[in-house]
Length: 235
Image (tube, rainbow, N blue to C red; front, side, top):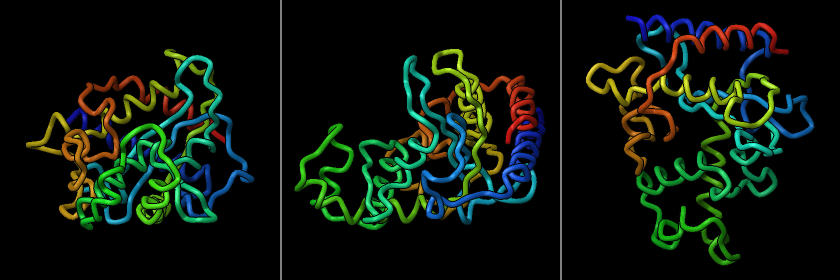
């Protein structure tokens, strides 16, 4: 019951955040000219993925942030744009976005992509022109999938480093949402047809999230007080 109550409060806070932002956005409609905060935490939802225990409405399927390493200068929009891909071509670079990598891997299995693509996907931190050209249709499919996922963002303009408040929110939100340790009695479980069932990572299949890190951890409910304060001062 404690986790269920905490999930309800978590989603209440996201609802308050959504009201302050004027609604969720789609990456398909976003660009760098919009008024993004320098740093923050983002929460992705997904069509067809609905809460069944903590209330009504869509459930969060991925939580993320950026610039946690000391000295990192990555801005919030830069990270979101890596997930979005290249708007002009519709492609992208899954080697620069672990989110894109996981979605692409699941699409490969579900849609039976040919070895010319599947054989190189996720290999190496860079790739030559011929490999990137062969992967382009799958990159486009990944962009189409991710760009139709509504998301919210929470401005948290703190310094990169191990004490980052963004890191506290990210890891505790993931641990709260994850069903990895409660697979026999999951809360807000994913739909039977959700794409993550095709993912190659056990952590994704069992947690119900497009996340790998923190899904097996135990959350500290105190983080909800921090989230509440940050939502109240969000703009």
